[in-house]
Image 1 (tube, helix red, strand yellow):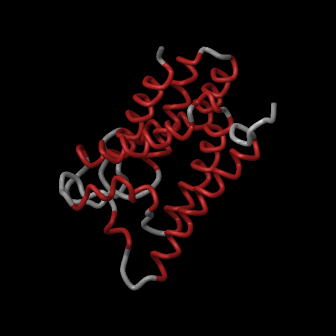
Image 2 (spheres, rainbow, N blue to C red):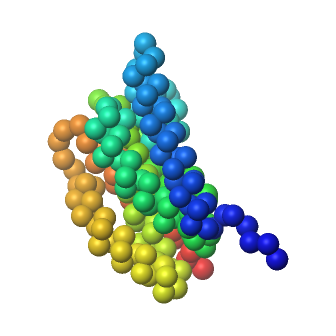
Length: 186
């Protein structure tokens, strides 16, 4: 029986690389085009803000914002796509949409919420929660490593002033827990 490419290390790295490259391409376009794409982000509780559920994780306020999200997203997507038992496509789509919708529901109305951090928070919680529900040694080890390396981000779900969307972080974390529970809690 031939082994499929999905679920292999090379497929995981390729998928993660293409995903992060897409975000860099969108940021480049944002700087080249005469109009800012950031307006396509989530504007909470408005009809036009609904489009942001799809576009928000692709948009970043500047290169520094993008760079802060690119490496964690790259690593977490590799971990997710490396093991098919995580149901990576289903998990990523669920986290992406649910975190966006959650941000649209609870986000500050005087802001446009953009950035991949909601997806990052969702992936961190997903990998930790899936490690609990999957009950495999590999998943538990991954959960512990993710907790050790990314556990400090949980401070970001607490309300704070400023430009950081703690609402997006909270919605992402809740989306990750929900997706893991739905995919793995038999």
